[in-house]
Image 1 (cartoon, rainbow, N blue to C red):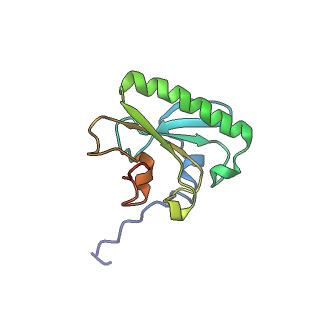
Image 2: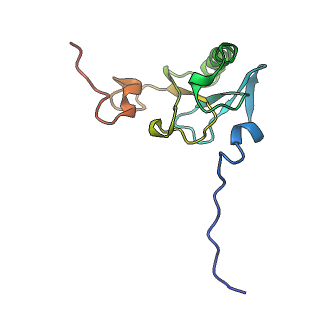
Image 3: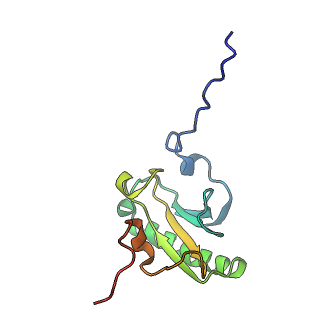
Length: 138
């Protein structure tokens, strides 16, 4: 018997799909989607809206699934406004590995923003491409 420690195995969130198998902390739900706080929140209240049907891309959602997700985004905004009182929001979806998607079940990020959480928020979501966020209007 070896006394060497075996490296800890990390769970693959795609096998089985984390969002299909283990929906934790559900905040709101409807027939086609549910919402829950992000386990790796980038700000207080960071929430995910997750369609129930397993598809990787937002572009593969059916119109009724998109509508269901939008309903939950609106509902979450009301809850987040009451609980966290953010000063703004970013809403976004990572589609494909090149865009940073790591769980290949579409999910929409609702990221509450707060005055002073970054030095200069100009450009907002444009900062996903480093050095492209700040720009001068023409």
